[in-house]
Structure formats: structure tokens, C-alpha cells
Image (spheres, rainbow, N blue to C red):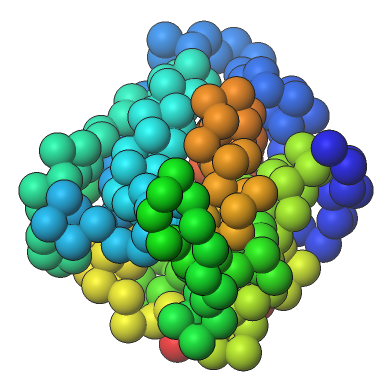
Amino acid sequence: MRMLPLIPRLRCLLLAAAPLLGTTAVSAGETAAERRVTTIAVDVGHTLAEPGATSARGRSEFSFNLALAREVTAALEAQGFAVRLINADGLIGSLRARPAQAEGADFLLSIHHDSVGQHELHAWEWAGRREAYNDDHAGHSLFVSRGNPATARSILCARVIGARLQRLGYLPTHKNGNRREYADETHAVHYYDTLAVLRHARMPAVLFEAGVIRNRQEELLLSDSAYQARMADGIATALRACLDHGQPADDETAADAH
């Protein structure tokens, strides 16, 4: 997997380099037990009744979301976060109900997987079934809302997640750039101001699209447990760095006044 350099544009000034290396820095005289435990709410996108996109081999987006959300939960707990997993049973149909269930958490991360428009699909046969694929697009992307009361922190954490994943070799997609304004083009962070799960959250919130499941090769990667676990570890490490030591840049702070 090709390694990409971490773009130094971020103003996430760390007390030490340890958070980006997978460890947690503790200031002098402070023990881990004395720190307030940070709580992350992890939302599993879509539902059993409305499972979202369909993969190139006919698997539901919800099943991908649940698998990755469980890996992210484990990685966050390994980083010392308290985690609240939302919609693991796939029964929460209301997007507004999800941030309500996250009430009291310090951050909300909504897990999704991406697709393409119907006009971009090509037919193929898989396991005796007629399915549809598109191999032109691949990669992750992130979304924030200027309707969220903590837009600056949301943008910052999305940037840090994107940068960390790129450092690990995960490539972003820019297929959403034509319809969603960039908050940070380098790290594929977009504004999605009207998205209810972000807009109604009272804490910083980011929606993460892990990859394009209509892409036949990327679908296989996104189904692989080792690939999921490495991605989840990157997300958890980035959130530890952002939430412990990150300082929003001027353009991020200005977004709060939008």
C-alpha cells in the first residue's frame, strides 16, 4: 500500500508526537486516571429497513457500516475513549434520533460507505445474479455541517482523520467535489450543511464515507477485517490527537460564525 506524506497544513499542534504514533501523551504530573474520559458516539449509518447503497456483489451498505463501526469502537476503546455505539440493531430510522442518542458525548462519528449514481453503473454477473458496479471511483471522504454548533472542531477532526488515513496509505475520493463544497480539498472534507445527523448534533460531528462499495476491488478491501481494523485504528488515533491537543485554524473557527 503506497504511503503518502502527511500534509503539514493542519494546525493540530500536539503536546508530543506520541498520539500520531498510536500512543497517548499525558502531561507532567497527570495520570491517565486523573483525566476525564472522553466519550465518542459511533453511529451506524442506515437501517435494516432502509439499508442504503448496494455493493457490486449485492451486499447492503448497512452491513458494511456495522462491521466497520464495531472495529472503530474497539480501536477507540483501545485508545482509552468511552464509546457509545448507536443503531447497532439497525432499527433507528430517524436521523434526528441519532444525535439525540449521542447526547452527552464529546464527539459523534457517523459511519457510512459511498456509492455512485444509477447512470454510472454497469451490469455484470456475480454468483449467478445480475449485479451492478462502477470501478471508476474509489476512496474515502468526510462531511461536516455548518449547522453544527461546533463546526470548527468538526472540520479540524475531519482533517486530522483524513490526514492520518492518507499517511497510512488510504486514498481519498474527490468524486463528491462537484456537488459538495470543500472544507478541505486536500483531505476530501466536504460541507453537507443540511444533513440531519450532523446538523442536529450538539457536539462536534463528522460523517465518514469509508469507500465506494460499487467498486469491485474496493468492495473486497472494505470487506476485509484486517483492512477495516487498520482503518479504524487510524481513525481512533486521529481522534485522540484532535480531541486532546488540536487547535482549530482561523478558517475553521470562522466556520462557526456561518
